[in-house]
Image 1 (cartoon, rainbow, N blue to C red):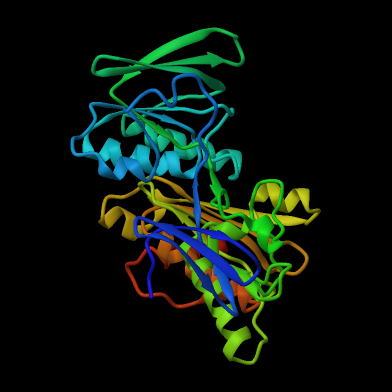
Image 2: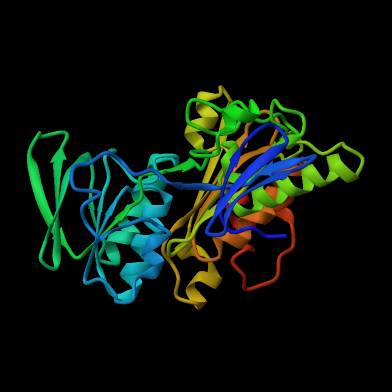
Length: 354
């Protein structure tokens, strides 16, 4: 049965549903919290006063293409929407408080992303903190502070996208009534079987504070299904190296450690970099922007990580992930036979550089 309404806990076995038809209390032997996450709305003057400010969810409802889209945040969501709207034909300005984009990536990768997106006409304003929003007629004015020079500047657009991160949706659930613990960021605390501190209550997906990917939610389901109806052996410890993709153009994908992370963890490493322009398939389809980068443990020859900034990166990264999770040496990908001409055969060339 599906109930459309707002749910909140009454006890560890009861949930109250508040809907247009009134209130109803449901009782269950097992309860699964699967409320996802939503955009963090920063406390910036004017942010609640304008109808021209959107989140990654509400911007989907736009009926007309904005002439100038201003994006607050240069993380993965901000970059994806900047690429989308630049391809649609909008002028796009991205304001980022940090000194580079996609700060989780190595600096050389971040710089390459910036260069590629700038070639699409996207403008980036780094080291800048948004101070206020003001709607004036058909425009919205965004005032930001350059944190290096301490100078304030204005930029005008017709739509603003807030892409400043996401938070677990736990507000209003009244978790205290059930005794369920949360972190200081509001995520539901779970063990490696996704069970909360209350044995009959579980938390699935973004709300439990893990990686916010659809495929992680799917694996959450597999773990819970196995623990309820299977052998009870699956845990989050089984996941190994988890790949992710960012759907800019060309796409960005990574699995495992970046070069920076590997060094910080004390590994002695070998690094290989291959320009996408050197890949035959990339030249055939005229998609020559980007780079492939691999990080290998110099002592064991195991692959520590791989970053791909190229067309079809979101597909190729799964091959590297499989190699890592099955314990292959980097020579496995160096010497594997791939079909030609494909983007995946570039793994031969990339790992031959080590």
